[in-house]
Length: 179
Image (cartoon, rainbow, N blue to C red):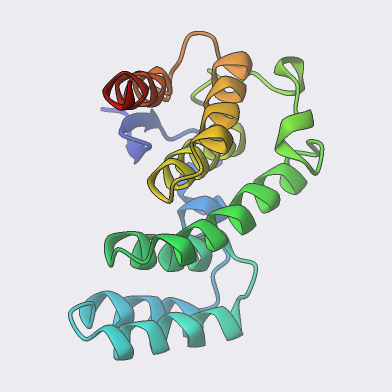
């Protein structure tokens, strides 16, 4: 049986260079930051304490994917969408830097990566960040920015592996309801 990891709702095989050693899956996270992330999770119901642990993790490893993802998820699930969007922008920019994409997501091109390739975890992470960016902009009332981001997702991956078309459908329904 081949070992596998979950990413973005899909199961990915673990290769020779174990995918779990990738920073997206916590590889290279300093132990103190890992401890603070663990404490944040254990104290999720105590918002101030959980957020304090997340901030301490950020002090230890400010640019680590695991810390940024922890912050994003905390804000998102606590309904603090503007703060989640801020962290989402940081994640999107970090993924772009790591993949040597254009700094502005609007300038990323389809041939910059194989965005449908499950093995390219950074390209997939970029796509999920952009989808989150689109969704959060829509939820916060900036439908135009959300639409542009969804269009970019579909341009980069016409096979729509991240289900961006669903967000377009939501936009279309919202516009029909307004009429």
